[in-house]
Image (cartoon, rainbow, N blue to C red; front, side, top):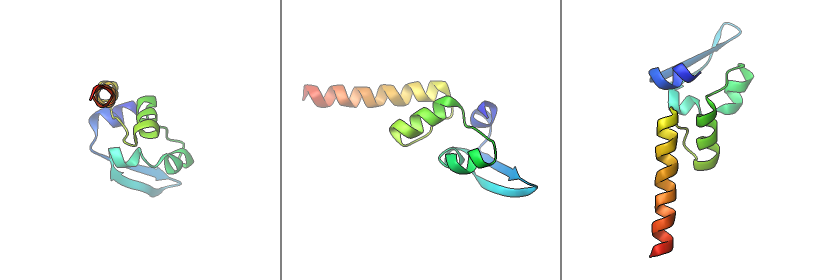
Length: 80
């Protein structure tokens, strides 16, 4: 699913010959239960950022950027 995350804007999951999920890729990666039912697993960075930050990162670089932004806000909040 890493290539799906990096290169596609929309994800269609087919299970038992029927369309099971048809949404933008980022939205598809928020539906972990449906993906697991269809034996599809988002990249670990997508799962991590979704479970911790509420939004799935589609690449490692994006995940790192998201974490840095959260940490920066927390540091700024403590300083002020």
